[in-house]
Length: 357
Image (tube, rainbow, N blue to C red; front, side):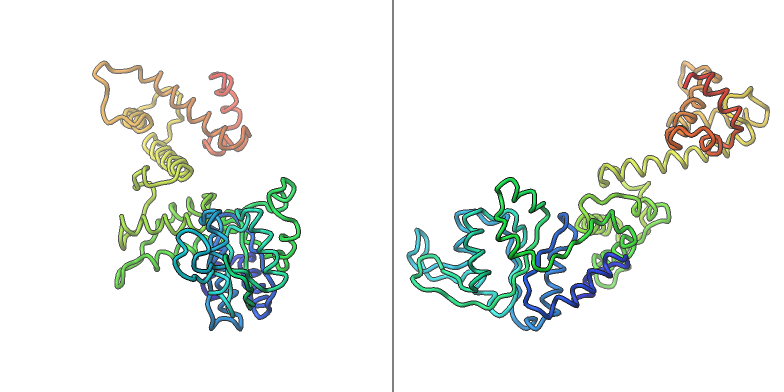
């Protein structure tokens, strides 16, 4: 199962090494990390690399179980213990006996249940609801949360003694934005996984890969996997160019990055079309044949308006926008802006003053 922890970054290598060291023990583990970082994968890897791998791995999402049902879900109940308890029912801890129980989103557990969980960790016994006796259990406990437990302790929302019982071996999973080296391996892994049997996995253009590695991935690995599933459905076996993907299929931040790439391409095309002419200078014969097309490209027009327009004024507007955008991109650094625009620094300063930018 260590092979399921995909990546080549130092953080991922360290996580795999830690799993190897911790898995053989029975120590309780607390996995910390944002939603979508792969906390359950780490928990499963701990189980599969342990001597308990032949027994059951039982995942429990503490945030998805109603508070009034959680005790019964975790510890089981006897027939007649409450309305609807028509038979005895084993709880998750009993089902995980000799194996591993994974308590995901432990930060959402109600305080009254935290007291009972603490007793289980201390004494290794459970009390099914409605039972007059106790059951001994042999379970390895792995918990996980995306919340700041220390802050919840300060707010009186989490028991400090339970925290120390859980936090014997902490494993922190960094967000995907903090391990960009793992984006390409993850893209390849999920593209292969998403492809239908016998089909070629999708690939991406070079510019698209650059955008994806610069994206912050707020949803982490889960978001990346979902995006690959989406593109595999829409473009099976194809080379995906994000600039050709419908904007409704992209997260907002990716839309922005794609728009920036389109703007850059459009700028380059305008530069090619206008040849040696410096935008805003008097029109020369060499450039006049392409000025009209350049303006249409910059404005997104497919036609010349019936009423016409002032060509020189439009060129000045375009030049001003290019200079403003280049200044923004270079953080206001005039020298960098001049290089971006392939313009003399002194000329750029004159134009900045001219347009009062």
